[in-house]
Image (cartoon, helix red, strand yellow):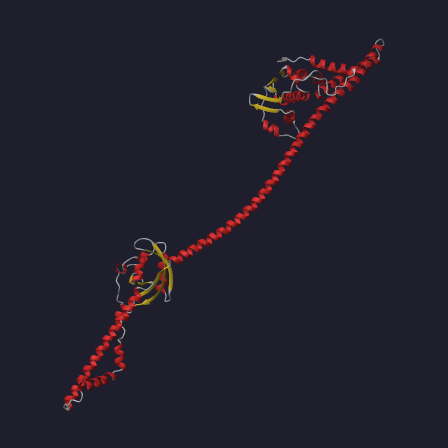
Length: 510
């Protein structure tokens, strides 16, 4: 148990005046009178000589006075001791801690409450620097507080975290005022401090609460902002979905339009080719027949008329050849009359003569069971692919192979020319060249698939794969209308011209 009393240095240096002493100053006459009255009661009317009686009387009065003064002094001493004890109790057991510090922060005095708050006995706490008990984080602020206290005369306040002897810390609030000792004019200060951990904890809790409130408010704003963004994203997503559906719908419409255009183009080619074969060529043949009749009539004269007729016949024959070539390029009559294999055979024949590139064909006979649309697609793909070989590949050999798979027909066109970037070719020059795209559209139009492969040193390979149809009989044409004798003769002649060409090597059937 710590000490219960500590003499106050200032009280020892300057004790308070005794009450009897002050009473003696005011009642110096009352005490002798009281002493005389007491002597009169004690001795009564005893008869002595005047001198002795007077001296004895004075001595007795003085003795009584001393006794009374002694009693007053004892009473004053008891009251002073009681007051000192009350002061010590008030100082030691005050609810706050009291320290007396010098300028260097050394503890000169401490009450029991201050020692108990630090968990250190008061005897071990004296002559110890208070800043050594302050936590390192609070020490600079506490030293600045002491400097302010001793530099001025007004009260200063400070908050610091103190360390307990048994471990742990607590927040303390300090208040101090500088003073001067009576001896040596030495500066010192009286420091009052109390435990403010609860208040600091409440402040920290309040700060955390305010921080959490601010964070919660910011979170609510962020949630509201994100909800707004989410709603905007949902609207944008719905808009994108609508745009995507619209784009797909338009793409389907464009694809359908493209297929219709290709189909209409093929029909128009067929019509123009038929017109060229059946009408224009027929008219040219009629002109040529009349010219032959005139030639026989003018054979004997051998004049200027014969020469003109012969020149006209040459022009007519040349015009007929151009018409036949143009008709075959638009749509060969042999494709409609004889089928895909003779048409490809005739085209490869003409391709070899025109370009010098050797072409071979390997095909299975059952390919003629495909409907006219699919055979036309195969012919157009082969036609466009070989024209690309002639224009760009710089090849010396090209192979066309048509084979039957499990449920489809595959046509492979392979050359030994130079390679190219397939993706760049598919996406570049869309507005001017539609070769690969046109082939792909034609194949997809009949439910097929087109694949283009090109590698350095390996040439280019084009594979068109279309679904296989059920066997069906081959008709003459879509219209089914009978042709005139002249048109039949012209068409048979054109087909015969197509078959008459030879391309080495060509393989028929499979």
